[in-house]
Length: 55
Image 1 (cartoon, rainbow, N blue to C red):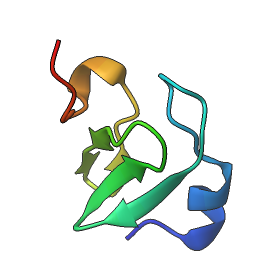
Image 2 (cartoon, rainbow, N blue to C red):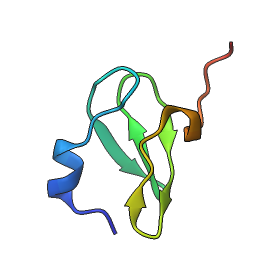
Image 3 (cartoon, rainbow, N blue to C red):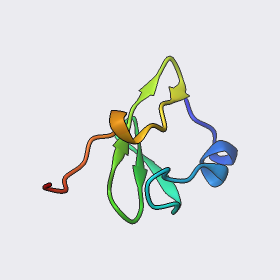
Image 4 (cartoon, rainbow, N blue to C red):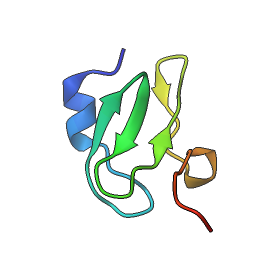
């Protein structure tokens, strides 16, 4: 489980805005990228994120 204190200091590495916890993933509040959590460790790498954006 990710603590609230950790969520407060995490930021999306792509757009540098805050994140929230949704459905077991770290979700950027601006761009919507979803970062996985593996073994209770957030994987905050852009290349690991799921994105709804079309390129």
